[in-house]
Length: 152
Image (cartoon, rainbow, N blue to C red; front, side):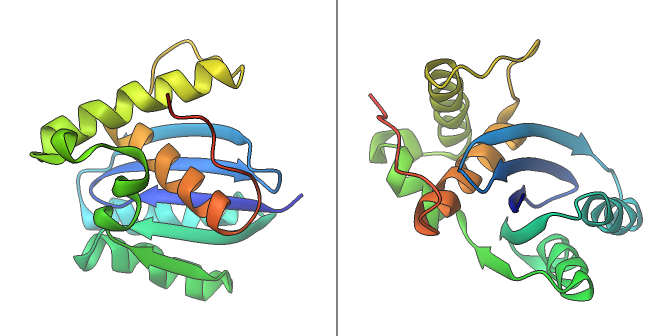
């Protein structure tokens, strides 16, 4: 089974794994605290996903570079994007007036999509995991792994 890993890069990292059929397998977030811990976590996550076919990383600077470097070492194609690349497909302009509003809109949208697609979790994804889930959905649609879900 091929898979896509979406990463909302930062010391507080959001991760989402999608199957080749564009189905969300899991999403979670980790507060790693330091770049040293982030480097170890990135290497570990990629090692634990032997079926990984693509990585899409949203963010910039050193934290995104850590994921890009780990992907390169693993030989997995990595697409680096910024928030504006995917947010306009999911979030209304009025919801993007601040980072806080955009993150809240992402959480609400992910919860709505996940409920409609029959995904259940004991907890609702926090904003880092929710943004990673939307980044992964955006990439899965671009790769032709699935169609865009109804966002209403």
